Image 1 (cartoon, helix red, strand yellow):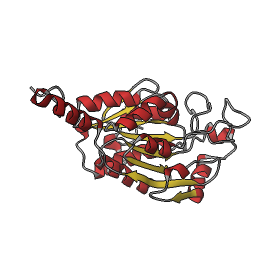
Image 2 (cartoon, rainbow, N blue to C red):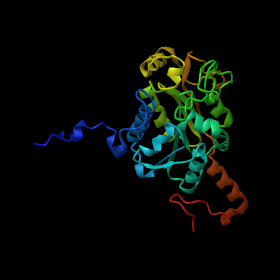
Image 3 (cartoon, one colour):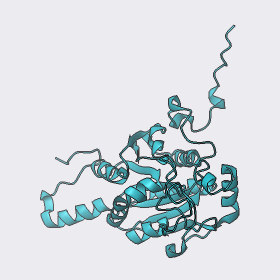
Image 4 (spheres, one colour):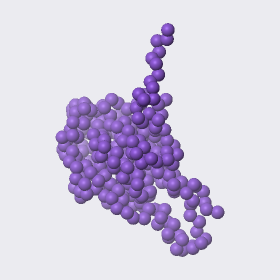
Length: 296
């Protein structure tokens, strides 16, 4: 008699199983890491929006969150460190009908990729950026990140960080983003709803998700387990929609202001480009057609 366990029925499968590359499980993320929760919220938002998944693409860079591209059952691209946003920009311009999502971490997108971040927001490139912020370089050894709070310890600032960190919603909003929000990995329903809102919008849309790094950030700073960090999010998160983004700094083990802060419309990069060249060239200008390629 076989000792192999019977296969689980379809009814017993997790609801997002059809949208994840199960052949790559178990994943590499540490127990109590918040990235898997964020992936679940993203997939749930796609399902609830009833999107054609053949027209959804995910682009990521290097780092813990950068591995998301390898786990979702979508057209996905794992790019080089800091280069996820320019790659996504090219993809969106060539295939304007796609929903292009950049899914990466704070070190990747606003550390080495910071210049690409601010200029994509300035140009209002039509991409959705979901940034998982765990305040540290998680995959490469716990180094100080551009979001590490003042006073927090890292492997390169063991006596505490003295560099002023970015306030990511303020950086995105002041650079020109049309949709800006921040949640934690505890806010599952709110995060899912926020992703659904962002999917419906155009332009540079930015969602920051504060998530625990229990292996490095929590251990270096003696903050307990991933559960302890989630409890901290519960006790110290304050939801203030439409808050002034200049007042959203995150201090070490202090309150975290969450919510939707910016939601406005302005022409996307491609809309501005098409309008500009049609005005100059008239019928001689041939814009990119939705399925890719040029209009004959």
